[in-house]
Every structure is written in C-alpha cells, then in structure tokens.
Length: 472
Image (cartoon, rainbow, N blue to C red; front, side, top):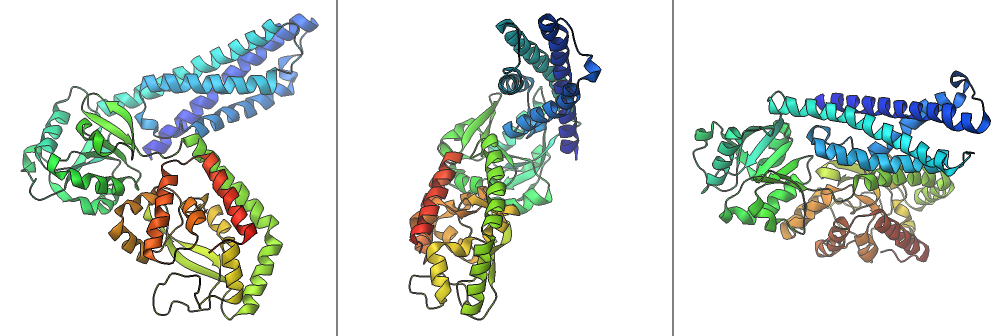
C-alpha cells in the first residue's frame, strides 16, 4: 500500500512539472516568438492549444517515464540516480516534442527554435528534478529513521551470516533491512543464532513458502565457502519471485554469466539484477502481445470458426482442449488449444505425442503440422498468461522429471511462456523428456538474449513453419 501511495505522488508531481513547463513554453512562444513575428498576440485564454497541451503533454511524459521503468522500485532510488534518470528522460522527451510539435512552426529565425528547445528542457528538467529530489529525500529519511524498511531473509547460518548481522546492526546508516529470520543451507553450518537475536525459520528448500508467509522483499545470501554448490539452486528459486537479492562480493564468480551485477551497496553487499530485458522493451513487448493477439483473433475469426467446425465433425469430443500448464513464476494456468487428439486420450496418465501417435485425429494431424491448433492461445495472451514469444509451458508432471535431470529448467519461469519459442522452432512438439531437455537448451539461450528483435525473428520463422507445414 505504501508503495502504491508513493507511486501516486511521483506521478502527480511529474504531471504537475510537465504541465508547468508546457505552460511556460506556451507563454514564451505567445508573448515573444509570435509577438515578434506577427506584431500581435492572441489572448492566451482564448487559445485551445493551451488546454489541449495541458492534457496531452503531461500524459506523454507519464507514458515515457512508465516505458523507461521509472515507476518501478520507487522506494529504492538514490538522489544521484534521480538526477541521471531525470536528465536522460527529459532530454529524450524534449527532442521528441521538438520534432513532433515545434519543428514545423512558422518562425522568423532559427534562434526561435533553439530558444524554445532550451526553455522547454530547462524548465521541465529542473522542475521535475526538484519534485523528485524532495520525494527521494523524504523516502531516504523514512528508511534511515527506521520508519520504513524491507522485509528481509538472510540465507546462511554460519559465521559470515552472524558477522553480517552484527555489521548491519552497528552500521552508521541503516539500509532498511528488516530481517525476519535466518534460512539454513546445511546443518553443519549452524551457529547459535540467538547471539544475533534471530532464529532459524526454515531451510533453503522452503524459500517459496517463507517468501510468501513473511511477505519478503529482499534476500541476503551469506553462505560459507563449503556451501557454494547450493548457490545456483538457491538463485534459481529466488529469481522466479519478486525479490531483490543481495550477496557478498566474494561470491560474484558464482553468478557471472547468469545474472548481472547492478548496484554496489557500500563495500559490503552487491545487488544481483535478474532483469532479462530492458523495461522499455518489456513494455513494448506486452503492447505487441495485446495488439497482435487482438488483431489475430478478429482477422482470423473465419478460419477459427472453420477449424472449429472440422474438429467437431471429425471426431467426438469438445472443440477446445484445456490443460493445466505452469507459467510465470511457477503459477499454473489453463492453456487453450484446438483438440487434435481423440477425447480421453490420456486415460492412462500424462503422455507426450509423437509422429506416429495413433491418438491423433485426422484433422489433428494437419493442425499440429501447421501449428493451427495453437491459435486459441491468443486468448491466453490477452489474459496476460502467455506471450507471443517465450518458452513453451509444460505440465508439472513433466517439469518434475526435467528438473530432476536439468535443474536449470526452473529459470524458464522467469518469463511468461509463449505460443512459440526458439526451442519450438528447432524441435516442435517434444516426444520424450530427453527431447524436452534438448529443446530447453534453446529456450535458455533465448532467455539470456531476450530482445524485441529476437522475438520478431522467432515469429517470422514460426510463420514460415506454419506456411510450409513443417511442424511436428
């Protein structure tokens, strides 16, 4: 609730600053630029552009900030970060507004262009920055006075963990870590935690439950050297949660190449960044998902109705096939497909399909080769359960078997599953767990290199497979 309240105030003051800077620019151009050129001015209160601008221009700025990810982690920004972020966004936004609204104005000389640009940038940047610094200073004060804090777990019960707790408690500046308890990695490294006025509340295998029960926001990983082999598995659990992970600097080598180091907190802790895609690209990716899925469902509705008709007359059973799959952060959802197999095809338990699967219907064989059975999943995309591009979602039954052989599979739950994926292009429908693991390797490669350009490439290749009927 506190976070939403602070976001509201940031948006409100950003809107106020954008409105003020636009008003200053408008008055400057009316009373100086246009007055010099025409010799007269239209009364400001009679110009509809003023009122339209006071609505549209601030909305543009708020959208720009949202796309850049500014309103994420609003309680964790330093004043230096505020300065860098405000300068970059102000410069980008002013350039966009200059080319969109000012460049085609009729002016008497180029000085009018440059002066308008300087007035807009100067007033917008400094007004926005002042409001943001006030907000940040207030937040920092609340945290350092221990009125606000982050619910935190400390993973580790050895000497390093106990020393870290002592260092945090005696630090001159409180970082906001409200430690709820210790999490044990191995039994042999279990020091008497009562010295730190904390108790061991569970082991690392129970992290998902502990995170939920204690409403955890931060985790500090403080393992002993002999416990390093458990670190990748612990990270695989944490990265699928909405969690900020900190760790000791001497553990960098355990995560390099898998996660990115983002923020150094003094000389003691480093924050690990799990973001696999810049926020502005994630914003556009979701917009593309919604736009393309909606257009596809509307434009393909005749084809969808035709497929539904043939599925119905080809064999007994429902038109659509709904099945539990595991999605983002391990949350299950119902995937929607056209039925391509006879009804009750899994009476003997979960099974994977193969090229010679006699459970497939005549229409189903064609649907799977052309991937047309996947079209109803555009509904899953609109509902936010899936994306157009992402690792294919699997059933928990098979995930358990995959994880037993390849624990790295858990990393795929960091992103939404997709209708198509790089692994799907390479392997299509997997016929056994070994093939699912082979397909996973390409999905992991996609995960570590996610970008809008790669998504477009995968969608293009998927379209070729559908046209050529090369699906499995």
